[in-house]
Image 1: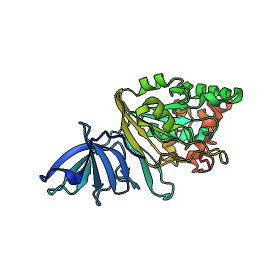
Image 2: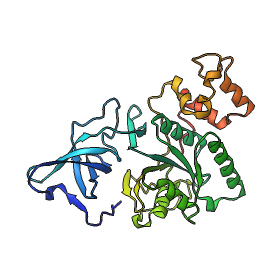
Image 3: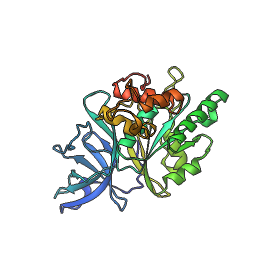
Image 4: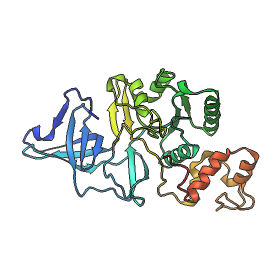
Length: 330
C-alpha cells in the first residue's frame, strides 16, 4: 500500500555524509525495515538494528508502529539504523497467530483504541470485542466501540446493535454507531480523534479502511468487497500503518485479525479488566474468588440476577479457562 508522502520522504542513502542522530515516530514497520516520520514531517526508510529486542516481552516485532525511536545515519549517507526504542506510554498486544508462545504488538503510544465491530458481513462476536476491551484496559488505553455498516442492517440486526450498544455503554464504554458508506456520525468520530493518536482494529471486512477514508479522504486507502462465499474480508491492509490527519493527530490502521489471543494475564487479575466484575469483587466471600463456582460469589449472583450480561461472563470464563475457541472467525 503506497504512503502519501508528498515528496517529503528521504532515503537514508541521500542524507549528508556527516553522521547524525535523530528522533522520529515509526509509521510503518515490515520485517527488518521501517518508515520513520520526524516531527517536522520528513520521512526516512531505515533498517532495524539486529540486536534490538524488547525487554520483558517476547515479541515477533521488536519495533511497532507508534514507537518513538532514535535512529542514526551512517557517515557516508548510505544507510540509516534504528538504534533505540524510547520508553512507551502504552502498547496493545495479542498472541501471535503462527507462534503461540510469542506476542505481536499491534501499536504503541495510543490515546484511543477503536474496536470496529459489525453485526453481520462479517459478524463480530461479543467474545472478540470483550477480549479487545480487556486487553486495552490492561494496558491503560481508553477504548471505544464502533458499530459500522449501520446502512445495511435490517430490523433484526439493528435491534441487536442497539442491545449491544446499551450493554457496553452501561459498563462505561463509549459507543458510536456509524456508516462509512453514508457518512453517518463520521463528524462525531472526527471530534473524538482530533489531536489524538487513534488505533483502529477489528476483523477483516469490518470496514476499518473505509472508515479511515471517510475520516480522511485524501488517504484513499485500498478497500475490497466482502467475500460472498465466506462473508469475510479480503485483507486489504496487510501491515499496520500510521497516517497524519489534516485536522490534527494520527490514525493507525491495523490488519484485519480473525482472533484476539490474550497475553500475560493471570487468572486472578482478569476480573480487574471487566469493569462490572471489578466493581463487585470486594463483595465476594473469598478474597481470591475466581467467580466460577465459589460459594458466596457476588459476581455469579449478579449474572444469575441479570445485573451482569451473560455474554460478558462467558467471555470472562473463556479467558481464565484458556478457551481459544469462539473468539475467532474463519
